[in-house]
Image 1 (cartoon, rainbow, N blue to C red):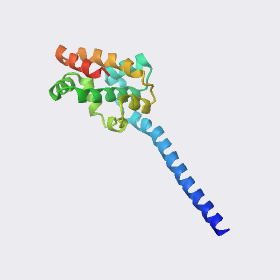
Image 2: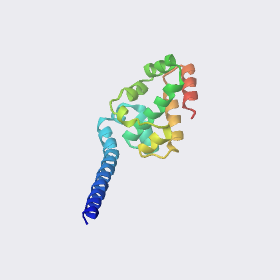
Image 3: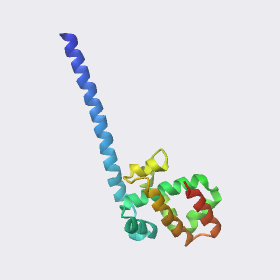
Image 4: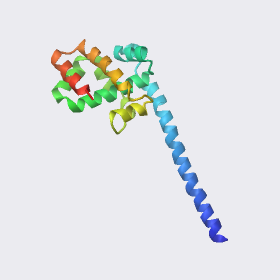
Length: 154
């Protein structure tokens, strides 16, 4: 009888521990975008983010996070001097990557997984890319725009 009670108590304890952990994970997934929303720059201050929110119907957090994910991916594929020129010449790009909320939005994994973490389907990647390219073309040299275009080709 004591063994049954001990096993039952242990099972309940382990189960409740896993439920609390699951609950905390769910709470963090919900809380992270809300916290990031409060840190996100106003889309009025950033024409790229404004274009994304108005044209694609995404939230400011999704616009910021999705752009940051794609730009971060492009950074790994571009020459350092090209990416530096991009961030210096295109004001919104530098603002997006310098935003404190971005580090909490960028997760591990591939671009598709990061978009899903932001609450967007991976099909949104192909919808974000033209907005980022079009914005950059207004500020950077054709060489940098070409390098960005190649880097964003997933």
